[in-house]
Length: 271
Image 1: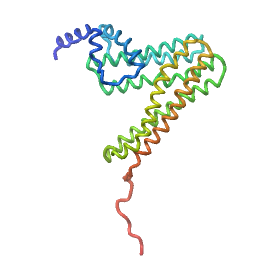
Image 2: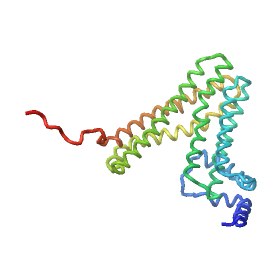
Image 3: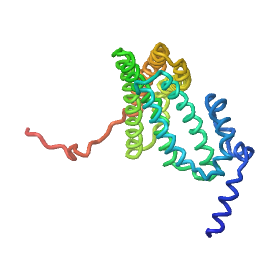
Image 4: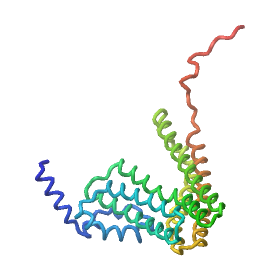
């Protein structure tokens, strides 16, 4: 493709309309209600102007990550409580940007597994870090060390859950590579655990989406309410998710594996 053709294509894409954005969305793909009724409508309105500015999906993901880290800084900074409210606003702005980078990836035909990988990491920055940083902020503002313990417990449990799920994914990939895909019996045995995970996922997504609304109260009791809310919808839910993941792992990773260090022949015994 020549430079002129590339410039012409980019120029056409810069004139993308709201109708083009809506037409690019696959209606057959299930969408969480938080995306359908909040993130996507705002992101759709922002997309034509973003295209005209020359923004790209991976660039939006990069800036979203930096903005999320700034939100965590505001939560922990021992200043006025309106900084925590600003952090909540940043969370919802990043939520919209998450939908925006998806729109841009589709419209520019730049969707990639790398982009999806980075997008997922960006999603975790605020959600996983917020409890700990809010605990730091409340501790520094009120000298109450219990807030730090609660925040650290929620974040640590979330990280452990992510570690277990990542390990399960890796081990399943390795197992299937060496001994074939999961059987119907293995999938059937793991299905109850996966249903538990699905319920936990719904509670987790809904809980972590609505929790920052509490921070708009901009006062110590509201920050405490935020942490206690996450103690239920993040800490407890993650414990349930960990249990489901471990049960799924037990069912799908139960195959016998021949170690490369195992003896290749049986030695004769005296007799």
